[in-house]
Length: 297
Ligand SMILES: C[S@@+](CC[C@H](N)C(=O)[O-])C[C@H]1O[C@@H](n2cnc3c(N)ncnc32)[C@H](O)[C@@H]1O
Image (cartoon, rainbow, N blue to C red; front, side, top):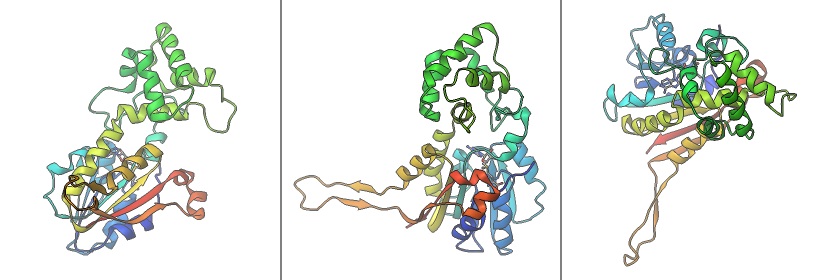
């Protein structure tokens, strides 16, 4: 079980602006980025890793380093753990780890038979199968449109509902076969259940809402001059990032003779950085990665 960290050198180079600073890796995963950050920090530097997934945090216990600690929580709760303006840099490498897809028992993969779970934190909340049992056709369809941009959402949601009347859908294979059987694009290279599985995963983990909340908290925790580095894997995540960091417009009443002006809290340091050819050849997952870097000003 391996996870190749995406845009590793590039993201860490941008993030580290002070080797004595305190950094947060909001998506510890298998510690690919954290490991390199720790190698570059001085003996006074600190790194806190966060991950929602208890398995990731158990893995982090192997990191024997006095300058490192791990927190098992969602990154939308970061404000609970740090003082305002105390952090030099915050990293988000969003989405799933390859290790999630490699473990059938976590229920993320349409290629591997396992319980239909899909939760990053499988100790809290309900597995996707339990939600699906009680979901209406409209609810399923809306999720497929909203989080998967699946143009066959109506067809898929209808097939799922018909199928669950006959048999409970409790495994990844059952769900992926239902989608594969009715999907009009089944002969394309990409598996017909790809978009649906992405949509259901984003939904059951409340991914976009938690990320948007976390950015608000990150803004407060970051020192002036500190950096936020984001690595997104689809347009929904990337839109949240672009929106959050877009300068806001301060407008004055018409009778005040001052032009409206832009208020900038962050400077964009790098936008739309993509993985190199060498990296995408070794790690196909990196093909869809988009990195952005912002500095608090
Ligand atoms: C792409 S992986 C990170 C990989 C990591 N950078 C590495 O190189 O090993 C994303 C990780 O973020 C975690 N995650 C997703 N949503 C989260 C959230 N709301 N709060 C905390 N961790 C989250 C997942 O459990 C997963 O381990």
